[in-house]
Image 1 (cartoon, rainbow, N blue to C red):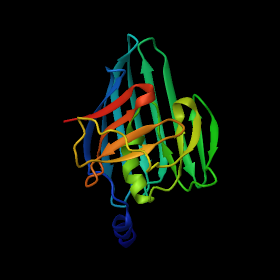
Image 2 (tube, rainbow, N blue to C red):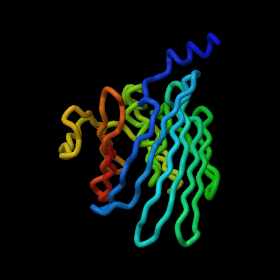
Image 3 (cartoon, rainbow, N blue to C red):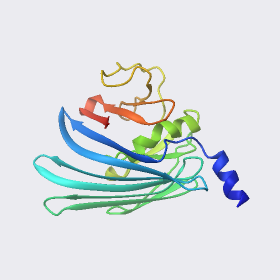
Image 4 (tube, rainbow, N blue to C red):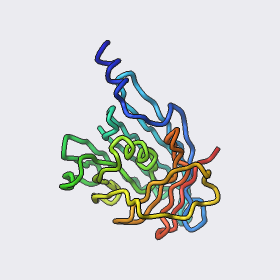
Length: 215
């Protein structure tokens, strides 16, 4: 029992248990609505379970994924499934072991941590769970460089929080929100409540993508 109690005490801060709903817009048109459910166990493990549905280019589809984080908020595992109305489906799984991550499913690939990175993050295209976790992870890791994996494209890239970026605050974002901005390989900004670490909005201006939290 004592090890479980100690693990819970040292676990890094994360959003509270609950379900958080987000809408993804592409060039102003809604393409996905998804819900991220956060649960914690006594050992300090955080599980983000997500499911959503949407329509893009006239085709409806669904997505589900699960991201599991250890008490330090490093990813332990990730799985994602997406299906489209024309019966096509996509599957990706990630397993993490130290400085290596292995992807299976539609693609088999191994990723290594970048030389200046100590942690992996998952920033998939479509599923939002990885972006939801990002503010808590960056706080826990003091904004150190990380290795981001995008399973849908079977790609990985080192990213770092760029504190020189000062994006305009969207009108829908509370004035008290903080932001994390990344410039490369694609510029994106995550706006979040610094007290709860819950994401309110994520924007990728060059791609016309905006993800906003719904009440």
